[in-house]
Image (cartoon, rainbow, N blue to C red):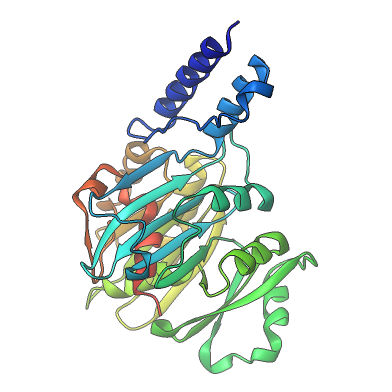
Length: 334
């Protein structure tokens, strides 16, 4: 088969896969540099094309004002884990989010630190210097300590009390000022080293910090503020009253019925009324089914939309913004 025909076939496959992953996904042609072509067999060209798709964003939206040479005026928020790497860019001159880009592994696989490093180094924006960089690191391995009880010499002891010890992890600390809480959490050594090496000046935070920031910004003066945020295999259930944190825990799930059971159990134990609003965000694959499942027990279940001291480019209306709530909320975190 001629090289040109093999290349065209691979392009068609990439395009078809992109549409299957996300109907509005932005697709760019794989780059086949000329110096490779003379020495490559047709099957090599085919492999290069398919490999290039694996580093393509499954979602990419950007404003026409985005300027890759003006990143000194931009703030970068990145969410990074073995499940995905996503980022958004805030134009501080316009106080407007102008870009959203996200990568996810194929076929329910996971990103290892090497793969994450490869994506970051090949991304045209993630290698630039920004005015401010925040890195969100979702992990279920965390524990909260009230400010008055916290001692910085006991971080590993706090974490070991609730989590099984893992010698190949690094322990980090997050001070959540608006709740007077310290969050002690751990990351895989490889991911922690990757962040430290590629983003040495970044503000590293656990995913609960921007979630608490969002809840605090939108907190009502009466009643409870109830939020369920989903990651791929677990979710956070958080309840604030107007003055303080009442409940925060992590639950692993395998099915929608697991989610319904845990959430309804928590709400019952916390004496939450049926007519109180429950907000959802994060990686929810079955939006309608999830809301419908809760509707038999709860009167008001809705998906949370990012809100803060910023605006959004019109192009971002094409995204399911509740999926990226933490990314946008990180902009208001100190």
